[in-house]
Image (cartoon, rainbow, N blue to C red; front, side, top):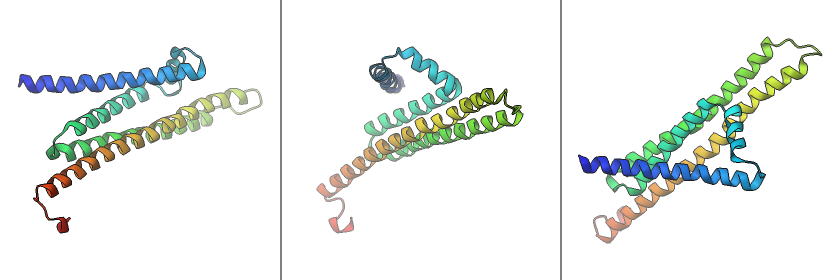
Length: 180
C-alpha cells in the first residue's frame, strides 16, 4: 500500500513539474518575443479567457499529461487504458474550447441584443461585442491545437508500444509472421 502511494505521488509530482516547466517556457518565450513582463500575459489571459476557462483547461492538460506519463511507463497490459483515458482528456480540451467559443459568441449576441444602438453608443457597444468575441475565438485558438498535440503524442506513444509488442511476439515466435 505504501509503495503504491509513493509511486502515485511520484507520478503526480513528475506531471506537476512538467506542467509548471511548460508554463515557465511559455512565459519566457512571451518575454523574449514581446519584451513585456510575464504578468502582462497573465493579466491578459485572465481578462480575455477568464479564470474558469484557465482552470478547466489546466485540469484537462494535467490529466492528459498524467496519461501520457503513465502510458509511457505502463506495461502492455495497461497501455490501452492509459491511451483511451488520455484521448478522453484531449477530447475534453477541444470540447471545452468549442463550448467557450459558443459561450463567448452567445454573450456577444446577448450584449448586442440589450444594447441601445445609436450614433452616440455604437463605439461602446462594438467594444463590448469585440471583448466577448475575442474570448470566444481565443479559446478555440488555444484549445483546438493543444488538443491535437496531445492526441498526436498519445497515438505515437501507443503505436510505438504496439510495434514493440508485435516485434517481441515475432522474435519469440509466439505469433506466426503470416498471421500478422
